[in-house]
Length: 180
Image (cartoon, rainbow, N blue to C red):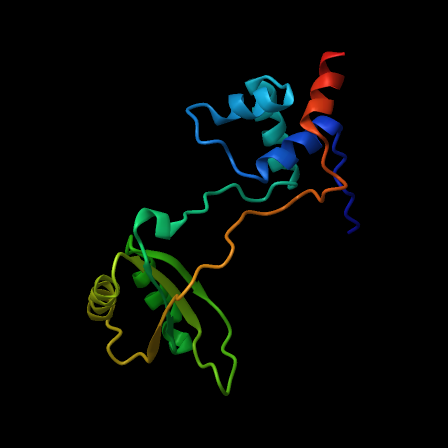
């Protein structure tokens, strides 16, 4: 099946270029986006919905900057779970609100035997280890080999980039065209 690229007009491109920088932290972010590029709030929402329904925008989410919220002890806990048990144990782990990621990955033998990954954020290493002890006990993970990998630094966190510099449209130009 041949995929056809979605045809974006200048107003769509201006909106995409703007949202890839993140939503403004104001009570009505779509109205603010519209103000910046000369669109009404309703038009912003309609275009966002069109982009989502067409598949141009696949995911719209939040990037939490944990350190700014006081969560400085962040650990990826990796587990070597027997394949027959991975769904059950994964479901058990994913129920805990302090486990923010829980996903399966293939092992990379012989050096990396781990196939289940969980992320636990905490305000201290002791807090994370306490949460880990809780899930080990409650999910029956006593005999499952695992490692705790505390992060030492944060790498760049950003959302998807949809437009390159050459594709983006200056919001002021769009506004001028829209009002001409």
